[in-house]
Image (cartoon, rainbow over all chains, first blue to last red; front, side, top):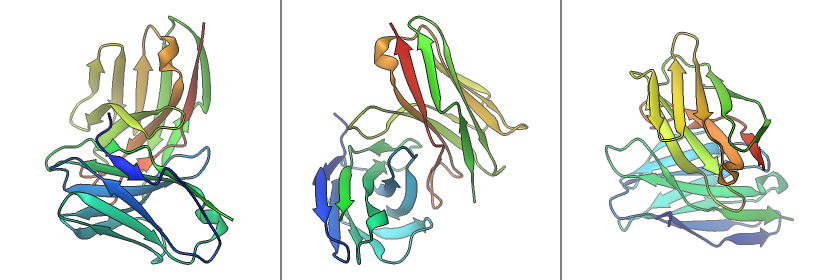
Length: 112
Length: 114
């Protein structure tokens, strides 16, 4: 049991649409990160939230945005979807003071 | 920013033999190096990690070595078993994956031949 739950598991959207992906972390995991994993590649860092504030961002445009809530859940929002946004989106969290992240199983997003 | 190179991309070994996967990193400020195992349809699972103040760490059949001077680190799996078959990713970060997140290699597909 990973302790990090993501929903939905699969999603198909049309180019130009908006999507919201959700993540539920373990209690006490106040740091959450989101990653994009293209097929056959390693995960790429999108951004990180700590205590509901974004405190780090990778090389992704502003149409990728997020939220973290007090109940250890979080969201990734992507506006104006492009075909290249098709990927596995991973949520990862960790408790304060820990190094290692626990990853969820991801949401497979397909943009057509 | 950080860049992590991982080799080989595919590794096939006989069951019971050892497997070694190597990674190099570019940012000398990186101080945290985890290894993840990803099985089909699942998210990455942390299997072992090491901080830059340690040269080697071992956990049963798995070990990681770090050479800070050369900026490379390796994963060693001994007595390989069929359940070790998966894609393995190395990663590097500063401050334990803080504001810059984890930078991953492209992965190694490990195949254990019976």
